[in-house]
Length: 522
Image (cartoon, rainbow, N blue to C red):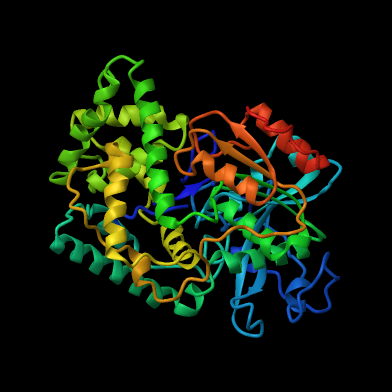
């Protein structure tokens, strides 16, 4: 399952599902100093206060510099303010340990409607830099745009930590393509070790509360301390699951909600993976067709041969990584990761084509750069905690798949759905992934959204979205009795990406609560 997150048009940053087959500165204040302390004497918040949580809902934010808040390399600039919101680690035990949720703010430049909370997805992606997503639009004029790092993610503390940077580098070199019994046993041992390190280095008590059901409780605290009686929310990709779950948990606290690149809460996680595979194949086919319009396309000129030409480029990496300026070299795993990263947006098709051209001559720098972007690796060799948070959250949000027959069948179906990703080594069996060994029980499961009484919401779905297939948006809109906006394109998410048809409809809805035209297609 590949991570799915907001992919900005300017660069297509990071990429909510995991492959069953294998395992964005101001000055002066340290990040830890701008923490909102719970205070019963603070001014009353907007909206209802759940019993026993008064001290959290009445805290006052101490806005300050965003220096030290960016953990994923995204530039924050000096136009944003940052702070931290204190929440209970366990809402069932509000007197126990607490967590600090990092938030950012781009202040409304005009007549303010309220605050707009935004999330880029992942799960596990930092949202601090996303507070600038609406700059230059009517949305930025009428709302304080609020980004946040969900609990365990980025600048929020305590953070989820599983592997050290050298351990991540080593894991990326391990291709895990051997589907023999011995190969499967080795991969499962590595997955069990990963889960054990997450428990040891993060703490079981923290891991048990990083799932979506706890995050939406944090979102309601944020809404209240911002002074908003009702929530305005824009969620991308996995952020749509945050949105639908918030609507279920706090249906009376919703004013407006835009969900772009939807996950269908009803969908079985294994089925979600297979559909995502088909989405990536469709995106690869579109990339290949575009590439073949250029001279010397490394995939040739015959669309029917694109998969085979691609496999001929990447399969040799299983036995021998490609040379790179970086001493790590380009592993097979990183090559596939880099390609998938680029398929999230046509803005990266140029670098992908260049990377495959370089691979023809045995050079892997471009694909390694794309893989590093996906993996959250900085130039100094450190990593954001995106991947560790991703695994921790998804393992809490859905039941683990422990039936080996189901896992084996899923591997077969995945390869059929995305032949460009099939290394030809399938055996009908596959390893259990890390969630099968997770130290805490899941708190979420597939279900139909039930949020009676919520106001109309807007779901935006892209026809050829590689990560969150179009039909999931159709289904989510039906479950939430919302408006569906269809965007015809091949990319992951589109709101505030410069498409006027989509952006105008979303802006009119958020500002004036004007529903989009029925069956709007852009």
